[in-house]
Image 1: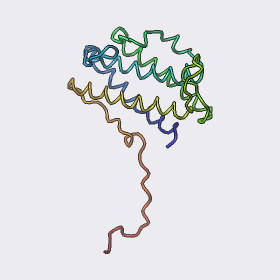
Image 2 (image 1 turned 30 degrees about the horizontal axis):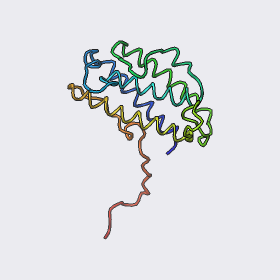
Image 3 (image 1 turned 30 degrees about the vertical axis):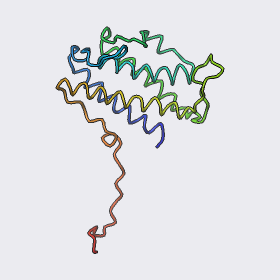
Image 4 (image 1 turned 90 degrees about the vertical axis):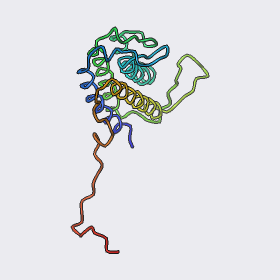
Length: 181
């Protein structure tokens, strides 16, 4: 599977998820449902998904922090309840737009990306590995968001891969498909 194909799937998932989350009451989006020191609610996770994509793809791989500056916030401890869900989604759309533009350039997927720029001993990964990291990270947190919404009595949208990327069904040959054995 190609990175661009999978990212296209994530774009479809986001559209469905964002529409669903916009319809939920803010009290449910802000409800403290997770323990720990960083992410406590649905909005924290939603903001974190975009932060990770913006950081790894744009700030690290492309050396471009433009969008992060436009949507300035504390990404380590986001306390996303202070932001309207529309603001988080707008940030997500901006990052998604830049990612799509970047993928349209057909970048060298084997290009080596240094994960920590100012550390001479930093690990390098291929751009393809970095993109897969970002995308699988999103899938994991999207599943958490769906579960948290379900625990509050909501029915999240169907976000399965096959819902967005229909499998190819071979044309029938016209021959009776019944087995003769």
